[in-house]
Length: 251
Image 1 (spheres, rainbow, N blue to C red):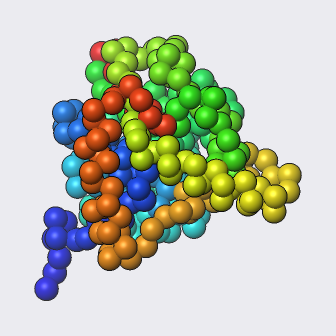
Image 2: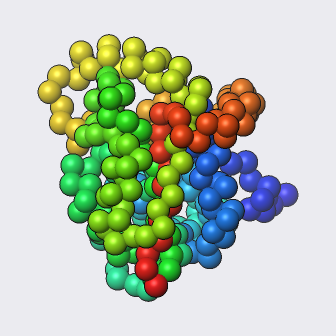
């Protein structure tokens, strides 16, 4: 029996990714893009879901993550390149350009946003997620290669400076995100003692492969356990550990 796109099992998500996807999926439903570009698609867990909603292209510079993403996404009709978004040929732009947990890894975040916006068609949207609130910066951030976290006001300022308008910010992750970060901070504090003087760029290379669940049974258990918290976080869209932003490029 040949599986169709809708029959194929989707890649599992980690608990924090489920919390994030709960916000992102509602934005995608509202925008209904025909074309989508994902910058830094990692191992393709989000990309596989986006490839079922739009004509999808994902770019991922890490070779190991690219290999996993390619296998997951191309069977669903999407395209994945082992590349940076800056290597893409100029074109008319995409209805949706997205980057999830990428911007905080880039030292020149203003330059990155300016480049990303060039791939959005006039009237199209940029959707991204980042960790929230610099006062929460800890071992997890350092081990992942983060340069910073963002407040809603700071992220809004960056997006508007890149020429985007109608910025909407959702804070997500309450209350489960706090517990997940506490656990990660304890684990990553120990890991930092072993990595020496690696730069944020060097630490970033493996971040897309860290804490990624595997196996359908484990993935289903995580989804089931996380689902009540996805409902809870909707009650507090201004409190949590992460931000999801959507903004529009002027037509």
